[in-house]
Image 1 (spheres, one colour):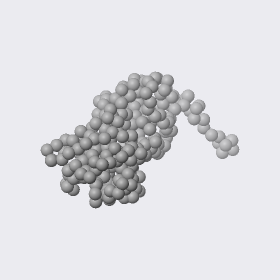
Image 2 (cartoon, rainbow, N blue to C red; image 1 turned 30 degrees about the vertical axis):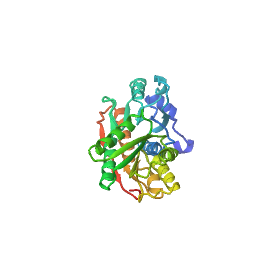
Image 3 (cartoon, rainbow, N blue to C red; image 1 turned 90 degrees about the vertical axis):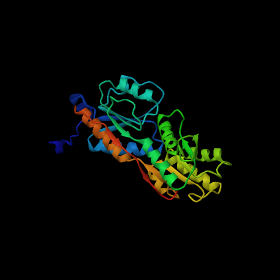
Image 4 (cartoon, helix red, strand yellow; image 1 turned 135 degrees about the vertical axis):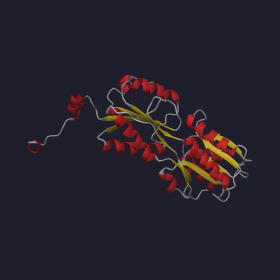
Length: 281
């Protein structure tokens, strides 16, 4: 009868019957940033495997309300830079199960996939010290960003007492931001041994600008990225970077929110970045 009538189940009718929409809302800063685009795709694939559709929200300055998530079975909030966003979304979510992916602890009562971003920055700085670098530039995002501060402070702690100097620059988290960083440093780069970038997108811009002014990488100056997005291995030269297991983060968050939806407990998960050394160091 199903074949004869070419019957197709109605998702709307099913949701009315089961009180489930089969929709998980994913909230992140921006999908223009390649890191977030990669993370979103990892989450989308795992949600699909578990029978869920995904709806993307990008964070804005407006306050969220209950109506924003009334249709959702679950919420995954990814790396919110402003701590107030977590509290607001948690309040707006009400009873809707929510999981958080973050680089620094914010809300202890929210099930969290935590990435030790500070340790990744510390490993990168330690590696460059071992390679003989003593004059560093740290190029990061907004100075108000909690994650930028964590990364920057981790580098400072490693360099402390090592007869090493560091200056910090704040630029846009993009290829053009990396180019801007080198423009701001032009005339001051002769004594710089290494540039530590907060993202691979920034590192790619730094490399482009260094090439333009005739500085060789890594012969004249070493460059380290962060995230290990696909761009890092495709760029010329391939970028040494701090690798975040993006696919594992997505899977862990989806499994976490699926457990919460089914009424089970979800334990926090902890990931530590690793170094991937390529041609820029």
